[in-house]
Image 1 (cartoon, rainbow, N blue to C red):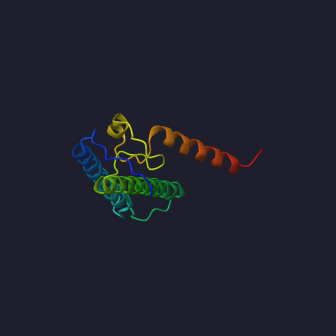
Image 2 (image 1 turned 90 degrees about the vertical axis):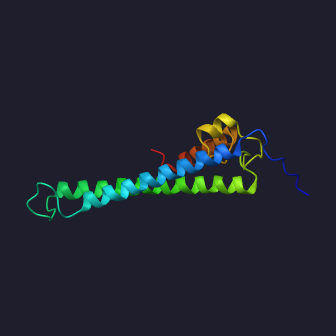
Image 3 (image 1 turned 180 degrees about the horizontal axis):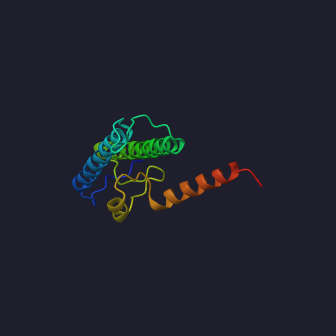
Length: 142
């Protein structure tokens, strides 16, 4: 039978739940701002413009770049929200503060800085190193 580590009694779980909920609210607020900005940017009524039709190629390229940037920000916010929700679920399941890879306790300072982290610093570094090695292997050799 798999041995499960004891619950983290050295952490104020309520404190970390509040941190995560505050961070979640901030991300949702940022997402609302992004959506509002996107609607403003793409509104046909452009202040100071004679026509609502964007005919100049530079304007169209600029609009496309703004849409791409807003979309990337939105995707990043969605990923962050998933991480936060996963961390809140780990709190509910009694496993918050333990590395999902090695089951070691995650340092409290790391949790203060990145409360949604599922990995200890060592496992995070190994994961990044593996990712960078895999990415480098995919790059074409010149």
